[in-house]
Figure 1: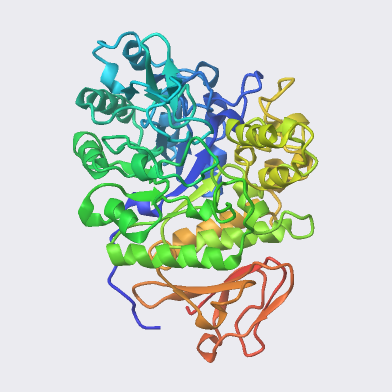
Figure 2: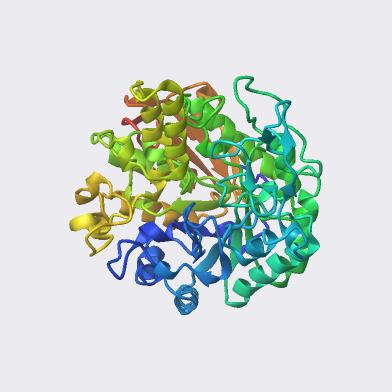
Length: 580
C-alpha cells in the first residue's frame, strides 16, 4: 500500500506500555494481608518480562483509606502498611535500573479530612487555610430547617456538602464527606500542591496520572444544578463542577511551574466530558497541557442512562464508535490516545465485553489483547489482565463486595425498596461493574490465597478461580494468555510505526456487524496490518476484498495467509495479517 503520512514524532511516553498496580492487591510481603511496596519491588523483573516499561501506582500516600488511598492525608508520606519513603525510593531506583518508568497517582481535587491543611481550615473561619477548601453558609427552608448551600448530589450518594458543627458552615465534598474538595482558586493552595508534586519528581518519579482532573475548576458561584430527577432532593451537578472556567489555566500553570522542569508523562482523568473538542483542548500539541487523557467512555459502555448500576448491555457497535472516534480525532487535533479497557474503577473487560465462560475465556482474553495491542496510542494494562483475570463469580453475595461505591448504591436502593425487596437486578450489575473486580488480589500461584499473601486473611477475598488462573501456571505455557500478551507486546514494539503510531481505518463491509470488528493499521512508509476480531460466541468466516489476498498471518492461530476462501475465526478469536 502507498505511504499514508509523514514519519511520526516519537516520544518515550507514546511508546510506553504502562502496567497499572493497585498496591493493596498486588503482593503482600509481610503477611498482614495487604499488598505493599516491597512486594512490588520483588516482582519488577516479572513486570519487565510481560513487556511493560512503565508502571502506574495507584495511591501509595498516607491515608485513612476511606476510599482506598484516594483520600490523602499527607502527600509526602507513604501509607504505613505499604512501606516507607525509603521503600518508595528503592522501588523507583529498581524500576529505573530495569528501564521502567514510574507514574504516581496525583489526587489533588480533594484531600482527606485528616490532612493538616483541612485540620487548619476547619479550625476557625479566620484560619489562613480556610480558603484552601470550599466553605459556605447553610440555606434554610420555609420551616427553618437547615439545608446545604446548593442541590448538588455527591458522586457516592447524598448531598455533596458536609456540615461542620464547629464553624457552623458546610464544606464541599463531591465524593465522601471525608474527602473535602480543594479550592484551586486559592493561589497559596496551588503553590503548596506544586511543591508536593516536585517532592516526588525530585525523587525520580517520571510523571503523574491526575485523578478527577477536570473537577479542579468549579463554577465560581456554585449554583444549583438543573433538576434532572424531580423525585430526588439532590441533583447531578457536573454542569457546574466539571471542566470549569479556569481548568485550562490551572493545567497550563501546572505545566509551567512543575512539569516542564522535567520530561514528565501526564495523563489526566477527564470525567463527564467525552466530546472531541473538549478532549482536544487538553491534548492537542499546540495547547501544551497534557500528553493524554482517560475519558472513561471505554469503561462506561454498559452503564445505564442515569447511573452506572442501571442496565445497558454492551454492544460491539458502541466499541466501534468510541475507538473509531478517538483514533481519528487524535490525528485531526495532533493529540494522543490512552489505550485501555480496564482500570481499578471498573469490572474486568473480559467479563463485560467478551466472555469469561470456561470454554471461551482463554481465547477471548487473547482476542482483547490483540485489539488493545494493535491500536495507536499509549497502552495501559491493569495487573492481572495479562493472565486473563476475570470478575468475581456469581456465587458471591453482596457481603463479599467491600468497595464503598457499590455498597453505598446497593444500600440506597434497598432502603428505598425495603429490606425484603428483590435486589437481583442490582446484583447483576454489581457482578459486572463493581470496582471490586478490578481490585481483586493478584493471582500468583495455586497456593492458598493465590500466593498473594502468606497471612491468614487477605484484605479482600481472592477470586475463587486462582487455582486455575495464576501466573505460575501460565509462566512456561506457550499457549497461555500470558505468553500471548508477551507476543502481542513484542510485535507492537517491533512494528511500532504500524501499531503505536499507525493510521486506523475500518474495513467498510464489516462496519455494521455486531459480531466482528475488522480494521487496518498503516505506517507512514506503506506497511499495513489487518486486524480481525470475533466478539461473538459463534464461528465467523470473514471474506475480505481481493486487495487482501496473500497477506501473511502476523499474530494468531488462523490460516497462514488470506485467500478467497476467507478467514475462519473461532468464537472470540482474534488475528492479525500483514502486507509485508
